[in-house]
Image (cartoon, rainbow, N blue to C red; front, side):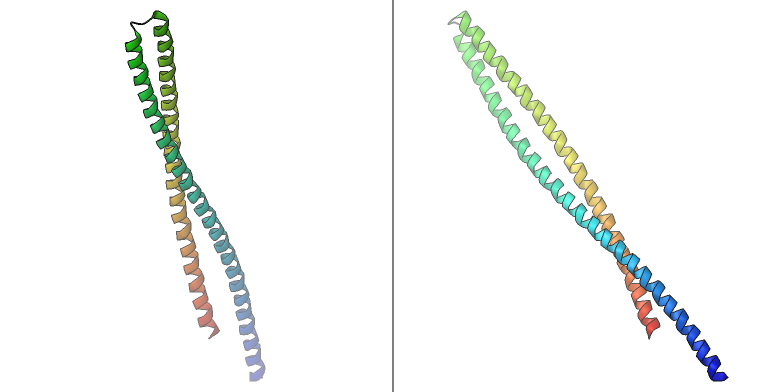
Length: 163
């Protein structure tokens, strides 16, 4: 009778342990799924961050080109103005033609400056996006670290119970 009671108790203990192990396995699967998802999100966020950095560099190069274009246009405008002053004495028609060229050069400068402002605004947006992505990366890495710590603690508990 004692043996039967002992066997029944052992079976109950085994049943509880088996149930506990199944629960642990289910929790582990869920946590591993979450970790996998977080890793995927982290990889995507890193890719977006790299793209934002590349976009920022491209915008920076565009900005530099536009600044050079503006300097050239200013030089042209100055050259046109000098030509205009020298040719004032020549002929009224020549004066009118040079004034048209000067107006065109100033219009080009204005357009280039407008493009420069637009490029600077795009660069600012790209910089803001990069900062936000960097913060998101940090949050995702923290979440991944926390889940890894929980998984390791659970694994240690499972090993201790198994012994």
